[in-house]
Image 1 (cartoon, helix red, strand yellow):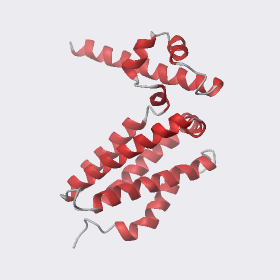
Image 2 (cartoon, one colour):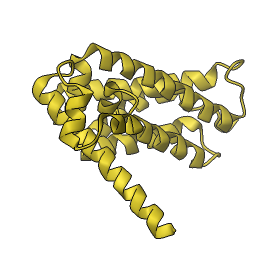
Image 3 (cartoon, helix red, strand yellow):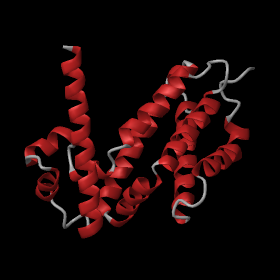
Image 4 (cartoon, helix red, strand yellow):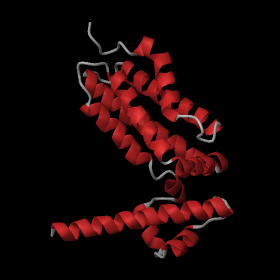
Length: 203
């Protein structure tokens, strides 16, 4: 049973990766609006209905890595040492994600170019960013033992960390990925750390 489950999981992962790859190829070649889900399904050798087993929309194919990266950030924060401020753990988590971006530079750059050129993808991107802020806020709230509905600090920390990440990404994209994204992230966090780095730290 375990072997069968493992084979199924690997097959699903391969199918998902194939859908992502052919979708990005088609969109890059013909444009987002001109590329249909039927086009993507045909190129991936799947039925159109199978596409929706993996992605709720065409926009979500372009942004397919968001959930994975958010999970890494939240898990890193949950696993971080509680004797340090959550800001420090967030910085380390975002630096890890930045290194991941560097390792997948060509693929990430093409995703970001599509986001910039397709309004519906940009709008979906903003929705997902809001979900990131909520998830990071909740993780910081759990860390500090605070209720984010009554204490502003968890959402402030989460929003500032995400702003640092977004500013770093924009700077990196301006260079077409030729600079080091973790360096930009470190710099942004350093600029903000003096004010936020002590929240939740030693009295």
